[in-house]
Length: 132
Image 1 (cartoon, rainbow, N blue to C red):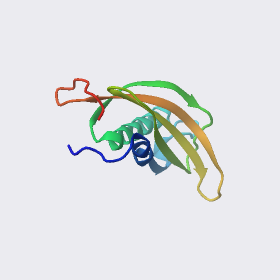
Image 2 (cartoon, rainbow, N blue to C red):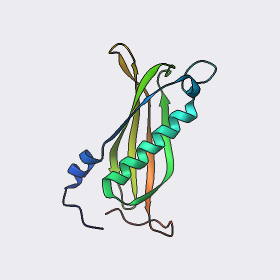
Image 3 (cartoon, rainbow, N blue to C red):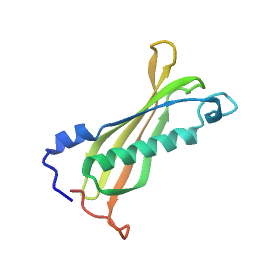
Image 4 (tube, rainbow, N blue to C red):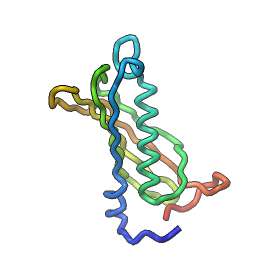
């Protein structure tokens, strides 16, 4: 693996990841809002991609901390899931993940969910390794 030529601060900025999704009726519960488990799945995926973009290593999720559901995400909206590196340790990395909800046909936008995901860099045998 070639060594990265960017400073840690530049790598953090370059690793920021965003995904957009439309919330269709097949993704919602009986209250017509996004299933919480689906939101967590989206967040974990973005956390993984963000960590991978930071160092181009293999990662596994080891924990999620204090997931705050601030407002419901209704069917018929658009969400943006944003991952940002907030801490890099020896073998672990913490990613803050936020979900923003937008109305499809007007410009309202608000933070709906936020949480921290911790991932550990691993080798081919799934043993922790140092983050490069």
